[in-house]
Structures are given as structure tokens and as C-alpha cells.
Amino acid sequence: MKTPTLASSLLLAGMAAIIPPASGQTLKKIADRNKITVGYRESSVPFSYAISPHKAVGFSVDLTEAIVADVRKATKRPNLENAYLPVTPKNRIPMLVDGTYDLECGSTTNTAERGKEVAFSVSYFYAGTRLLARKASGVKNYADLAGKAVATTAGSTNEKVIRKYGADHNLNFEVVPAKDYAEAFQLVDGGRAAALALDDVLLYGLRANSGNPDAFDVVGEALQVEPYGCMVRKDDPEFKKLVDGTITRLMKSGEFARMYARWFESPIPPKGVVLHMPMNEQLKANIKARSDKPAM
Image (tube, rainbow, N blue to C red):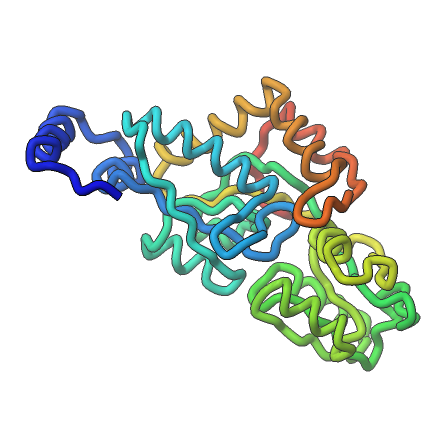
């Protein structure tokens, strides 16, 4: 990297002084620092996942990049730095609230409870809690889990849903929370859990990228349909409006549908697997409605 000269530093400082700060809490912070920090998931295929130590890809990453491009325009910072920060289901909300990062577009369900702490964008995906199990395990539905161990991710809506289902149906299974999707999958792959309870699309992604996809099945009915949205800090309508505006523009132009096809119906990195997940009716409807309503 070249060291800036004194003259160039003074010029940049002068330019910064004459450019008015962007309105809104988050936008002003980003403009003042000339940097936006975005949270990403390391193993949330096909939304956001790492394919190298310094490279994340996915459907949500593409959405994030489009939002960051609009942030650059809004802040008049064409060279705005975009820093990626890995987050987990457990720390993603506290780290957003305390200002560690500014935006998360991953696989986070919009719920009324979470809405007390953060705000959500227009919903860009709808998923349901199901099970991933080894074919040889004999697990075909939730009743087959009676007295067994079930993996999920700590702090997720899936954990709440599967615990409630087990209690309501007296299945007496043990819920084993993992720190992230990769660890949760390893619990099933290694035989320490009979099944993994997560959003169906995440299960398809984990199966597709496993060492032996044919050894696993996604089973059970969807227990709860959940909308995914980008998370932003609460009480910052200016920044939420920008994020919603980007997603709305992509939906209206048809680019959103093309992005969906790229990640859910086409070969994806690193192995070129195809998830074979056509867009569901809930998402088709929301491309027109563009709702940000939380899960029921």
C-alpha cells in the first residue's frame, strides 16, 4: 500500500470537511468513518458462507453488496470500505445493538421478540423448521425422535420450535444446541444426534455440501414458516428505508429473481452442487407485497 502524502491527506481532509454528513444515525456513523461493517454467517449455505478464510459468498452476500453500493451513493463515499465480520446465532443481535457492526443479511428470522431489539428489512426468504437425518437412522418424522438427541443451533428460533414440539408431544428427546450450523451438522454426521432441526433451506445446503449428500434426507413437515430479513439497528428509520429501498429495487427490476435462481436453482460454489429449490409461494407473493411483517 502507498503511504499518502501530506498534500493528499490535507486534500482528503478538506473534501471531508465540505461534504455534509449523511442523515440518520447509522449512515452518519458510516460516513464519518468511511467504513461500513457487515455481519456474515460462515456456514449458512446458500445465504452466506465462507469459501476461503477471506471470501464469503451467497444469496445474502449479493444482497449485502447491493445495499453497500447504495450506501456509497447515499453517503457520497465511492471508496467506502466494506468490512465483513463473522457472526453466530448467539452474538449476532448483541453485536449489532452495541454498534460492533452495522448490517446483517444472513439467514435471520424476523420475529416480534427480536423486533424489540432490532429492526428488519423487507422479507427476502421464507423457510420452515424441518429435520436432517441420516437415511440409515430410520428417522422419517418427529415421532421417530422420541428418546433421542436432536441437534440445533443455540439461540435460534429452531431451538424454540423443536423444544416446544417435543414438550407438546411428550417425545422426551434431548435438544443439543451447537454454536453454528457446521458444528450442528457434525453432531449428526458423527452420530451424536439422530437429527438436526433447522430451517429447511439450510438443511438442503448442509446436505448438498457434505462429503456424502446421498447419505442424508430432509424429513418431517415444516413446523413453522419464517420470514428472513436483513437486520439493522432499531429506531433508525433512515437506514432501514435505504435497505428496504435496495431490496425493493431488486424485486421490481427482476434482478432479485435472477439472484434467487443463481443460488437456489443453479450450481453454486465450491462444489457446483444444485439445491433444486424453486421459489415458494410465500416469497413470490412478497416480491409484490414487500412486507416486513414478523413470523406469527
